[in-house]
Length: 175
Image (cartoon, rainbow, N blue to C red; front, side):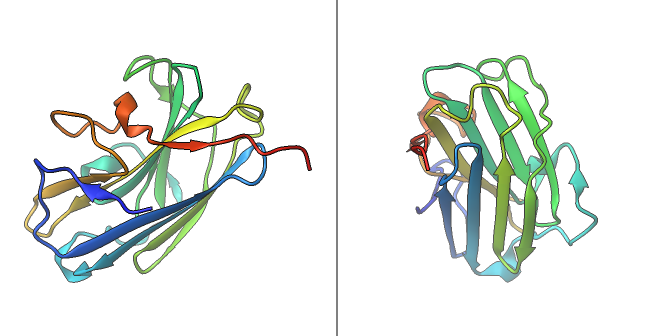
């Protein structure tokens, strides 16, 4: 699936951003983000020790939002090219934020960032259909930022907005 740049935040680098999302087991989600093009013009945080870190969205970062269909609560994941990550639960739109205990298994090779999430310990997620938002923040070496997503709401970029949850992944059937 192709991500599009928000019209109010154009990117001067010629980039191609896409993401694959696969849910073939009730409690798991596989994501593969691909950032390709003029990579020498964007900030790719250097690799460091894998671990939870806040504020990753302030530079180049891949993001995923997962909401059980029909509910207002949702999960947010930030995946940095550095291999730092963050995960949060929200009770509602930008409300009730707290750390989530979901730890991604992920890595980066060049502009490809792959992550596997295990939600088996999260109540109410296995059997539910999921509404998913997929997005990327790109920081150019000039400091300019652009915001890419499957869908954008009207107005300023806002990945938490319900319009960004543009992908539906149905609950897998019994094996």
